[in-house]
Length: 407
Image (cartoon, rainbow, N blue to C red; front, side, top):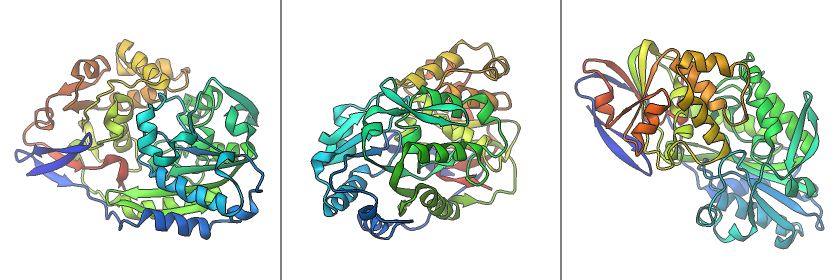
């Protein structure tokens, strides 16, 4: 059996004819016209419309997603700016903040690609240039200075499966994307990630999601416009109150992305593709989403295989470099997990989660530009998916691991 898997912005053909192969393909839903869906969502939002939430003389900050999210921010921003103009807010009153969290700054070219004609409004978030906006659960909430100074705060977002928040989007774009190290350290620390309910695909009774939502209320997120996607493309948009928006789109995503799996497997091939396979930090999501998801069908001692190009190596942001430092200096997955359970710096949480997986399974990264770096990080590198899997294995192929919920 030959299967096309995502690799970078293209695909790679994988021949698994020597194995017994099952492909996990979610229903996927039907793609929508993004502009029409976003305009309809803003016109008929959850809660009051923008006209009642913003005054004509307000300064407005719009926090958008960064290069790690495949969000059509150019279109969403265009829809929001048009609605603001309709209610009397001039373009000159608007600032756009790229919600980087602890990821690297976006280049001018990337900003133009992401925001089109609105790129001139944008600024990279600087996690070191924040002000304290209050506390949640005893944690100081640090907020981007431009966002904190604005009269009205809006956001875009992508509601997609997320390892900790259940689904991303909503207040997370502002609280984490435009936040400081304080809340990232608290929300991504071992105590939070070990709490009951913090898991992929769950927003109800999820302490991480509850923390982010409460912090969003406290910093004054007034209105958000989010979308959700499947392998078919963008399949829905929702706007208004952030909690309702996430619940709305998470429901649509679950329906479109869930696959029932009853058997167990020797190996699971987890596809990722661009933009997530730009670096090892992001690419490992494919493995952890499978192994630490709602249902893990991998047999004891099995292996996870992720084809990923990794043009940025481990990753260039603060969080990515902390991730690499922890993994590359560890003697073993077991010792790494035990040490990190005592605490770690914001951004390093992905190493902690990866250590949980490596304690039980081998993780192979194939087709990468940096095989030596992969090997430095307690993982295995191979030239191809075929060479990473033993002939005769029972293999589950998840072509889009970040957009598939195994249940």
